[in-house]
Length: 123
Image 1 (tube, one colour):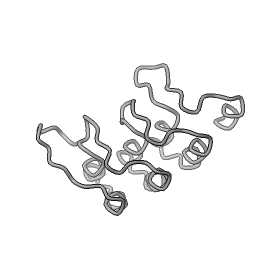
Image 2 (cartoon, one colour; image 1 turned 60 degrees about the vertical axis):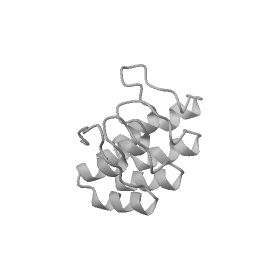
Image 3 (tube, helix red, strand yellow; image 1 turned 90 degrees about the vertical axis):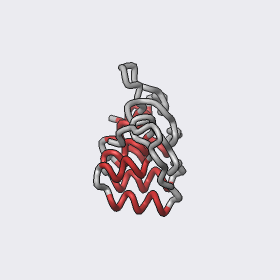
Image 4 (cartoon, helix red, strand yellow; image 1 turned 120 degrees about the vertical axis):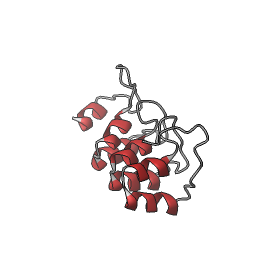
């Protein structure tokens, strides 16, 4: 289905019209569809577009525990220092979900822990 839409010149970076305004890349990342993530990136999807429930595609992949998608996004240039108002940063999101292998990936890419000055819930 994605290939057909892209072949029909669908805007690879269009946000959904519903309340969360997520892009196809964010949706594919949140659900762990690595092949779709790679296809969308190959067709020009912006790796660090912000919006939707998770903020970025990488945040969605990390929160969902999708290691392969996380690797793909990092390899394709996603920022490991991303922060979102709901989850302090990517390390907090990975730790909250118990995703230790993703934590290691993020640390290896330079993600740094930050304090929680507003005492927000990281999960």
